[in-house]
Length: 308
Image (cartoon, rainbow, N blue to C red; front, side, top):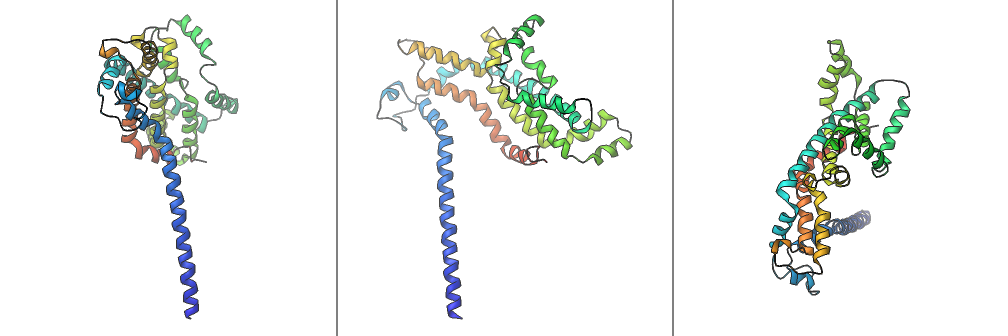
């Protein structure tokens, strides 16, 4: 009996040691991976408060001699933050609304109805996901030129209300996967009660897709906020550009000012100013993600990413 107990205790201790070692390995792995992801942000934060002397001092790496908040003021001024952030908010809000409304409606048609060449049309929708916007920018530019849409926000906003726009195919795919997994009994019951196709969609199907709506909302906001390629192509005036499109202009000023000295403090562009400008651009996205993080993760679990 004692021998059996001792054997069980030894096996229990060995198993406990294995569990502890596995936990230590997992924690070390997670710390290393977290550092890899957090390193760019830590570098940006530290560099953004470095003075010009600290930037040229090779002995100062992570701990600056003092906080240089002038970098943030210079970044704010050179970004013209107060003006261009409204351009970004306008583009993001309208494009996101258009994407959610149009992509959900198109996806519902793919999920619920049969029509000629349905499979081919869906394949074409999926192909739009993998085709870079740079490949089709020339025909789009010529088309919008003929329509007189250049130097307006129409080339950015109107396609989103037709399921096209920036990565609209991904959102159609996500909504379609959700609607495929949605029981038809809910819509059939609504139709028995007298609901039309549009009534069943707007009263039953669309409100039920809250998880997919949230996922597509976050993805669309992030993609449109970070996009500066198409706005620069279609918008000839820099005053119309969204906030991220101003970052290359600041970098050009940094390259031009790297060999010169200026007495205007707001015109001094250092690496600290560049990092402060980048942080100002992504600050809105970080704030939004902190607010909707829990709902976004739950949305991913219940959206079309996990649907059959």
